[in-house]
Length: 107
Length: 121
Image 1 (tube, helix red, strand yellow):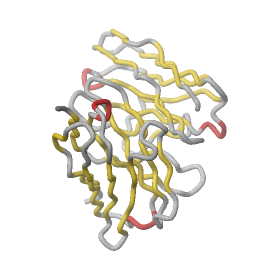
Image 2 (cartoon, chains in turn blue, red):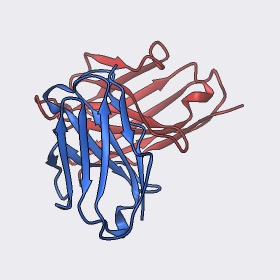
Image 3 (cartoon, chains in turn orange, brown):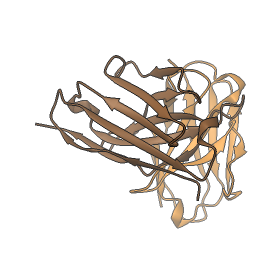
Image 4 (cartoon, one colour):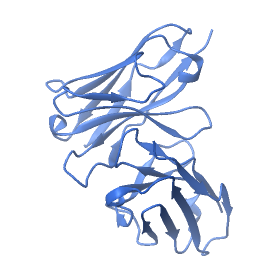
């Protein structure tokens, strides 16, 4: 099983600041089959990034993903108040599919 | 509208059973793999199971294996999760999600709104 560890647990920033979220895998995520999801309070998870760096349809370009192998990063370049959410990384290369424990972004 | 709608959640006693449904609309359901993901109250996301496009192959998380089964009816564009021998730790919101089976596209690109399952005496 690939264990994903996200850091930090909570990120407190101001509007306009840059947010950098980390996701580290216990073994290599082949083909960069890693996704990022945003879950706002009381809402369903929404796909932000797939393939480690490709933005999903309709996602603003202030969201970007990078990384490969075991280290991945989600960057929000200029925080907006509506970015308040928990962000999860997830690997989809091998079963069991696994999620990180989440990073809460407070604004 | 492209959407997934879960139903069938509720309160059940430990050891009981429940069947969840996931109704799809607005897309070609039979071409997609489908998954269940759950979220315990205040907790993160946990993958539960996957069924392939024709229903002939299923896989499960170890914590639910031998207790849960998943099936689908492509004529009705609906997936089902039969949950038996339920435990308190099975409590949570159950989401269904679709995955394009083409290589490189195995990410969850559409989620339902979820249905709450509460296992308690």
